[in-house]
Length: 79
Image (cartoon, rainbow, N blue to C red; front, top):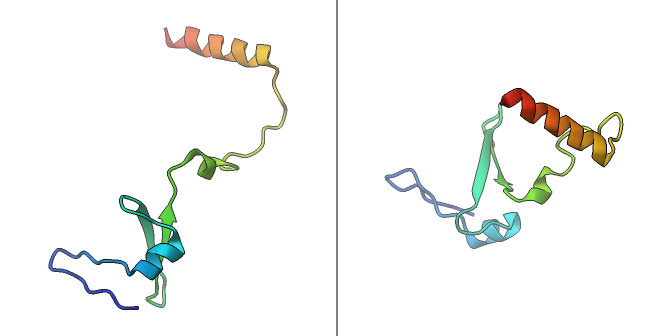
């Protein structure tokens, strides 16, 4: 597949690439240039599901009451 760079530095991704990456108008891509000169592109997901497992699992579970107390404590410090 070939894409041509315009005078503004833009390219049009071939439809087969857009389909393979499951991207649509307005989506963003993250580009990486490897040491050997290859360019890798991956879509950046902006949905909440993409945040799953980003943070480590908590060491202990808090009850609803404990969470509310922590929130109250944090709010009172900010006032």
